[in-house]
Image 1: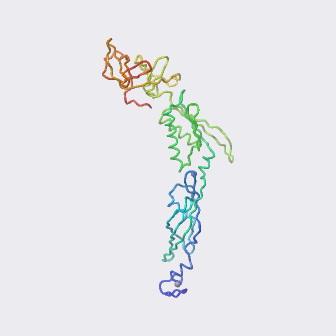
Image 2: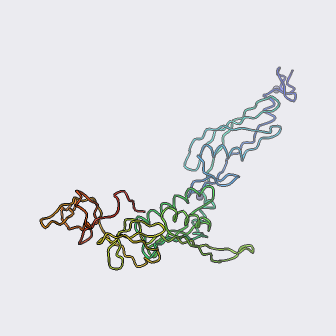
Length: 342
Ligand SMILES: [Zn+2]
Ligand SMILES: [Zn+2]
C-alpha cells in the first residue's frame, strides 16, 4: 500500500501512513496551562467529583484526564507525565499522550504548566465562617471537669471529627471552656448526638438533648440541637466527704458504693442522693504497717517516712497494706491496687 499524501510504502490508515495520519489527526489539543484549585487550609484538590485528598502526582493524572479530551477519530487517551516544580504553585509538565485508532497506536508529547490555584474548600469556608449547627456540652454532675477529663473529652472529639471529615464533612467551628466544662460547636446536629453518646459510653454519665428552632430555609424549619453529657459526680477511687465523714468510692454502676474510711463500712447510694459530695485530695499508696510501742498499728509514708496510726478494724496487722493518706490521717483503703479510676 502507498500513502496518498507522501507516497511512503507500508500499512495505511484511511489511505495515509502512520506519520501522515498523526499530522492530520492530532490526539489531543494540548492546553498551555491546566489549573486545579487546592484548599490552602486542608490541602484537598478540587476535581469534577468534588474536593478530595490525594498526592500531587495522582492529582495531576486526574486533572489531565478530566481536562484534556481526545480529538476524533480517537475516543480514548491515556497520559503519563513528569512534573518539575517551578515554585509551590507551578509545575512544568512533560506529558505523553497515548491513543489507539483501528490498530494504530499514536503518541503525542507536549508540555503544559500545572497551575495550583490556592482557594478554600466548602468545608474550610464554612468552618472559617464559624458555621455550626449542633452544640455538644460536656459538664460534670455538680462539679467541674478535672483537667484529665477535659483533655480526654477534647481528644475524643477531635479524633472522631477528623476521622469523619473526608466522608461526612464533619468539623468543629469552635471549642469553649465554660462553667467548668467544654462546649463544642459542630457542623451537624447528628455529629453532636453521636459524640455525646460516645463520651457517655466511654466515660460514664447521662445524655440529654434539646432542639431549638433557629430559622427556615426553603420552607424547612432549621433546628440546632444541644447535646448535653453530664459526667458522673464521682469516679471509682475518689475520696469524698459525705455527711461529715470521709468515704472512698468503691464502685459506680447502678449504685454508688461508698466505704466510710473511719468505720470501714460500705453502703450503696443512688446517684441522685449524692449531690452534696465534695471531693477531697488524698494520696493512696502501698505502705509498710508497723506496730508502735503502745501496740497500735501505724502506716509508714513511703517517701517521707512519716508514721500515722491506722485502724485495722480488728484485723491482725499485715506487713503492707493499701492506705489512704489525707492531710492529717491515714486509713486502710478498700480498693485493690489495680482498681482503676473510671
Ligand atoms: Zn504519508
Ligand atoms: Zn479545605
